[in-house]
Amino acid sequence: MTSPRVATFLRLATVVFVTGWAVRSLIVSGDQALNERFKSVLVTPPWVTQAKSGDGFEQSLIKIRSDLPSGDRVVVVWTNLPDYYYAYFWSTFWLFPRTVSVVDGVTLSQEPDADALIHVRRPFESPANFPGFKLIATYTYPDYVVTEYRRDG
Image (cartoon, rainbow, N blue to C red; front, side):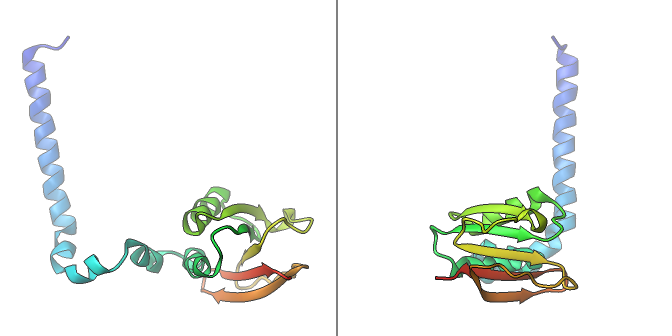
């Protein structure tokens, strides 16, 4: 059990910390908040703003999302996958409610059971050929080239 004196000190320390943090936050972000055009913030969905700030992979997923039916099964094939959880998180986030699987390019040994393939590669890597799938679109960014394929037939 703490003494009344220690409890009073802890309450005071908490109030000082929270107040200090609020002042710091106003100093750091206050200029941005005051200069923001609030009408554009109210009429622009948050995902649009987030999409502009993402890398080439995320930006292409937003474009692909509008093309795919919501019941499709999608396989994201990433050549030299840098981080599985990064690819899985953004793929499932942007392509929800579609079923998404993420595989490394070298582990795709047989024709996948999917309605669509999304191939992610670096700009210097050559495009892959997936039998049974036709090329729909290619999105080129400085960091990634993202190609969308659909099942042929």
